[in-house]
Each structure stands twice: as structure tokens, then as C-alpha cells.
Length: 584
Image 1 (cartoon, rainbow, N blue to C red):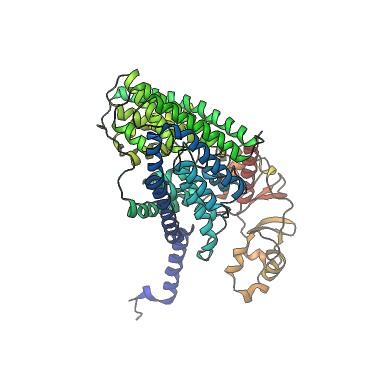
Image 2: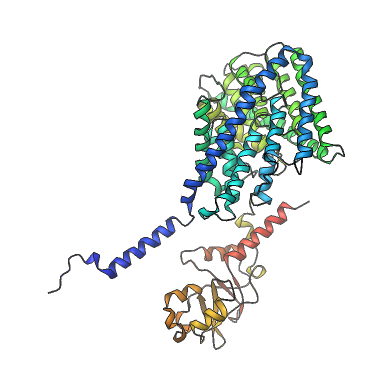
């Protein structure tokens, strides 16, 4: 009598279940995500330490002393800024290979054009130039050096962590993850860092592949910074958190007005920046001009208004003053106008940083003035939040970042709905205008754009094929070893019968290869399509449940004309994307 107990533990059945388990685990970890559990925290901690140092130098040591001196000695604003920005120009001109490549723009350009590779030789020179730009009153803030510093460190770490099975494409992911970590730390807002870094390269898309590592790096960078500087929100936002249907309508109107204003500013900035890059002048002289005009903006404002506001420098203190104290609508509008003008000349002439806070601050001023003077609403904080988000969304083409940033950095979570409405309207109204000249529309064309392209335009010809009478030893040595394809068409006495894949070799013991014919392992139920079939249908077949690796393109008389693979479709997408991106 046979015993059936413990049949689960029989070797044959155990091998069967372990094989299934290995297959499931391989599918579960097919993207090798677990490597980021070690690499992303390293990026986050290193970036957090760097940004902590930058924040202490500029925000705790340098700028408070400079600001106090400017407020007591107005006459010193113009010459000090002229000298400081001229020094920035000298640093960039003589210590960097390209004085016009830095900050957020360099990260975006590297992501799109250099596979995430950043030249680290001028790293410290660019950070020093950011300190002289921001710390002495240039109209910019810390997000520029933070995004650049984090992104550059992520790129640099890729070369030093290759032992962790990193691939070339991972360098772009680490670049974006570092940028996210920098943004998260400088604003003490990890979700903002994550979303901004993913939105930053594109005007209407996300860097999806960097999601998990950017999330982890942002959290670790944030934790590193608050370990030294505390976890309080960066800006002191006070509001009741209530809104009505009327507020939602006016939020949309304010978003539209901000979108129009930012569209004009975006276009003016891009034209001015292009003109300054092309100007046949030494780089330091361009920045001396920028420092002169920026200083004049600051001097004119403080000469007219006697409180602590001044539209130059990182202006973190100005955000809190505007959010917590009453100011006339005239002063708010003038502050926003001078702030935007100062930003135009600081960064347009080559200053080393970015304009996230200047836009945020200007939008808050105009939102508050809108509420005070045009609609007479008591909810000033609500409209300040909407204006902030609308300016960021339309200036950087980052609507999600705008909403998340207002919620995280100011603590104004209660205004999410009106802020979202204002940001969405501003983003739509401003069109494709952006302060960044290196943002792109998307990674590639949409799949549906290939709907009317026949496969005969992208199929591979001529085709490497195999005869069914060949044995597997001949197939391995004469065909598979010489060509890098996964599957090959099989002919039997001149008739197309199916395909054979290199994985078929693994299904037969090696010692049996000489005695096993290709015809015996041929897959015969392979999809065959006509040459006028569109590419979208071919892609549907390739990614279908049968996991077919190759499609045979045949004539009405069953003659093989070519083959189509996923690689062919991706190449077609890339070619069409390149055409779009290089249209004059």
C-alpha cells in the first residue's frame, strides 16, 4: 500500500514549487528596485549635509548681517551688489568651463542630453558663485544651488557606487534623486522636493523612473537637515482655512491673471537671457550690470517704503512679513514689480541660482493685493496662497509642485482646493511659456501618434532566418552567437513555419543539441501581419498576454517581408521625438 503523507516534500514536487517561487520573485523584482533602498539614502544624507551647510552660511550667517546693513545704510545697496555680482561673474568666467551653465538649467540639460553626467571640476566654484549671488542680495534664493548641488552629488555618486549593479541609465535617476533631495532639504518639504524633481525636466510630463529613489532621497535629506536646524515650517502661514464657492470662482480668476502676467514675464526673461548669453561682453561685466540694476530696484523700494521689506536677496524673512503683517495694496504691487525686475536682471545677466522663491513671493503679494482691493475679501491668506501657487505653476510649468509646496512650506493645507484651481488655471493660461529654456514637452511622442504608420516603415530587413533542418548546435554556433536577436524566423523547405528563440536552447540539454533539430522547438503559432498594419496594432500584439518577442510581416502570398520587435517601435518613437524637439 502506497503512502501519500508528506508528498509536498518530494524532490520533484519541491523543485516544481521552488521554480514557481523563483519565477514570481523574478517578476516581482524585475526592475531591481531594492538597490535603491541603500543608494537613495546615501544620496539623501550626503545632499542633506551639503544643503545644511549652504543654509547656515547664507541664511544664518551672511544674509542677516548684509540685510541689516542695507536697511541701515541704503546708499550701500547699489555698490555692494555691483561688486558682489561682478565677483560672481569673475568666478564663473575663470573657474568654470561655461559660465552660462549652472543651477537648475544644468541639471535639466544633463538629464536630457548627457545621460545625467555632471562635470564635477567646477562644483565648488559654482557653489561659491551661488553664495556671492544670493548672500549679498541678488534676487534669488537657495533652491538653485540646492538643486544643482544635490543633482551633481547624485551623478558623482553613480560612478562610485557601480558595484551595486548600477546601469548607465541609473545615472539620470540618481541625478534627479539628488535634485529632489536638495529641494526637499532647502524648503524642509520632502514631498515638494520629490514632486518638483519629477516635474522639472518636462512641461507636461514626469520623470517617472526616478519616483522611488527620489522619494527615499528626499526623506533622508529632509531628516538630515532638520536634525541640525529643526523641523518647523519654513514660512509662518496664518489663516482660518475656510473658503466659499465665491472664493473658488475668484481663485480661478486670480489664477488666470497670474497666468497672463507670468506668461509675459517668462517670455521677457527668456528673450533677455538669450540676448545676454549672446552679448559680446566679458561675463563679469554682464553680471556687474545685473548687480547695478538689482541694487537700484532695492534702493528705490526702500527709499519709498520705510518698513523692513526689501525686494532683493533670498527674502525668506520677507515671506513671513508679508504673510503675518498688513501692507497696503500699493506697497504689495510695487514690491512684486521690483522683485520680478530685480530677478530678471540678477538671473538674466547670469546670476547663479533660481527664481522659485521670487515667483512664490511675488505671487503672494499680488494675491493679497487682489483680495484687499479688487474683491474686498477678508481671506487674505487664501488669496496669497493661490497667487503663490499660480506663479510657480505658470513660471516653472510645475502645477503639482506649486500646490504641494504651498501646503508643506507654509502649513496652509486647508487651502488645497482653491490653490489647486488657481494653479491649474494659471498653468493652462500661460501655455508653453517657461522660465526654463531646457524643459521639454515630453520624453517622446505618444503611442497613439504611431497609429497610422504602417509597419513596413519600421520593420527590420533583411531578416536573419534559420532552417528547420539545422540542429541546435548549428543554430547556437552559426546564428545565435553571431547575431543579437531574441527570436528568428524558421523556414522548412522554403516555407515559413514559425520562429525559434534563443531561450529554446535552454529547454534542451546541451549534450542533446546535435541530435535536436530546430523544427522540433519551433513556435508555430506566431502572429503574422500585413505590411500595411499600423504600428500601434503591432505593439498591442507584442505586449499582449502571449509575450511574443517578434512579429512576422508577410505578403498576401505568405512571403516573409520583414520582422518587427519592441526595439523597432521604440526606435520609431525616439526618431519622431527627436524631430519634434529639433523643429526650428
